[in-house]
Image (cartoon, rainbow, N blue to C red; front, side):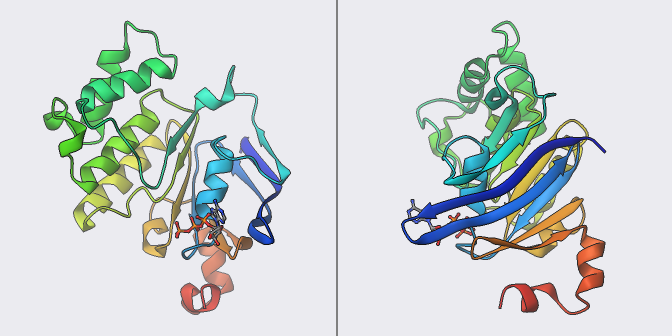
Length: 231
Ligand code: ATP
């Protein structure tokens, strides 16, 4: 399998506190990896560093040369609490993001329409984003993260605001996306990782306490993982 991203000794200090403490992992191309951990484990900090929004204190992030040109444009990022311009329609907003991501102007509208259809917002594409519910905003956030077809998709709790049906639908979308991109997404719910995930990274108090496939981790811990890892 081809490596897309290698993270080595990544650390982020806030004063005396280590939000992320010496974490090392690799993402292979066209895989989905879940970054699992309780509140405050360091998930958002890790994803923000990888997305280029936050500078690490130490450690390295090496993105494979396959991500050509400006590697940041090859990354899609869904923040935990995505923000939109409330006065724009969903279509206007996604088209704007597509333009800012460097997509050829001739294709931005059709690509925006396709993307909104894909995330299940086709019927409301002409509604102002300020009228959207939490779940719709999360789908819109996913649309803005994927509209430029990034090679690496970083998603901070992509399903946490969704009801069970929406959760399943978005997880299915991620499964489809995985054929074209590499996904790292955070969650604090192990069930979200069950079906679509190739690799689990367990963060706790900034440290990577376990990593491997679901099967590997299951075999290692016969007992429920949460008891062991999150107590
Ligand atoms: P959650 O599931 O609650 O979103 P998380 O796993 O995403 O949590 P982070 O938001 O990365 O965790 O936070 C990791 C640690 O870093 C926490 O202890 C948090 O208080 C601390 N932290 C995060 N941002 C800052 C900041 N700007 N200044 C100081 N401490 C911070």
